[in-house]
Length: 357
Image (cartoon, rainbow, N blue to C red; front, side, top):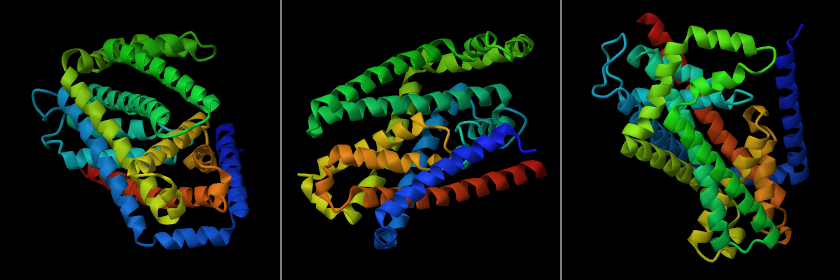
């Protein structure tokens, strides 16, 4: 009999696929094919943009690893140094696994801990992965706040929509403060303390915490060390992560420039085009994160891009915004499938090499 979790995954995927199918039909498949064909070799530029983004992600994680393993690189039960290329490999593979995980963050992070453990040990590997995860999420909050503030200066939104953006900015600021509290005090022990109060699994969580209290405390110490003792490293890692998000937004700018020159000409200058790209990425990612249970963000990404475009431009600006929104999403999925394939292949070869050792 099929497990309930598997049935839910299939249900969510089917629902998202149905939404995507409806949008494709409504958008005129022939128009979509023309848009995708118009990109041709430009798709390689989208792959390259995200490649640069992954390099910045790996650099951010590298700063964290170097900080919690100082004064030297070599530790754990192997004599091989942990090179930047290896960190980049683990970064790409971790994101690839997360992309294909319905709820996200349930596969990529354990993989990174497993991959990093032979080099720096389990506790430091866990601390570095959790720190980078917190950095990745917190940078997203900073990004959303920046886009909300830029909306007040760069676009003539209606007053009601601006109030919604201000509310989102306030919520993100509160979440940032919560994350900084976790950075200062560690949040692993606090998390298991909270889980121990839950019904059904509370007693098991409490027993597991008592059994592993020493290891959990050391992981929390590693998390708290970064902000308290190495603030320069903390902000360097944060800035690299934020810059990677800004670089990834260039993907939307390239697509809009090629597929919607009429829309781009409506923007007075390149700054407004870049803002439109930032807004589309921020709004669509927020929409996709709210509906986080959809594998590959199936349907949620397309809907988020379409709603973002409707907020930026009236429907009369182009023949139809929906074909453009679906075309943009499909082009990003082509890039995404490339990096998912690359990441899974890298994970496979890393596992094969680890087994040989």
